[in-house]
Length: 260
Image 1: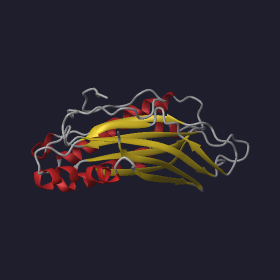
Image 2: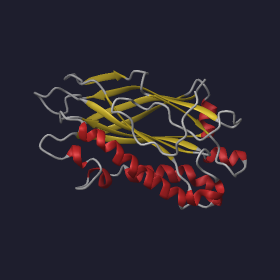
Image 3: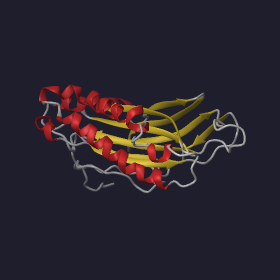
Image 4: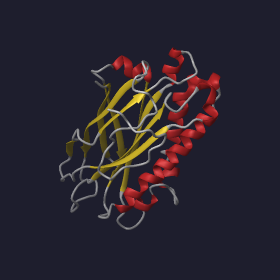
């Protein structure tokens, strides 16, 4: 598959999932690593966290993918570097009042594919170790019946993540290349703090506030470097991200792999 050229992608339709993440890499580049992220299931423990009389959880997820790799970054140009960022919103079927439910996530629309390149302008091994893809997840439970505000939040989240990640990248010099993955992860984590998300003017305020606001269950981050994905191969590496709030525990499971 040839992917369209883009440096930053912010959002798709509400239910489109992750999809193809554009890359600037030439498909014929021998160092280009084709990657695939597949979400598998969401396990919900205590799906009646709203209390008796409610209809159980109506889960949805904000999913952000951040590619910091050689398709947009050079070791000698980090001061002007940009990451590839995409944010989507995935709604899942409402759950009943049972204490535990495992919601399978259909393959269609929740598979992210792209190409990961070593950071250019550095020795190959160094450039590979510095290249990464990160998944950031915000797990939400819907109480409001109108999801228009949640759809608009994708743009705000994408802008905030892009700004913070790019700022972190641009603070690095050529000798700081080994620190690039941790800098990206730290920038993502700083975006997912309580203050940034749920404060009076927080990114999630439009859906959290009000008499019947949605609930933030939790956030999580997973990150894989080029060598880690390469070692996982086509069999892939399973991962799980736990989220918890007020006695509720959700767990998102998935697979990162080298794609065919």
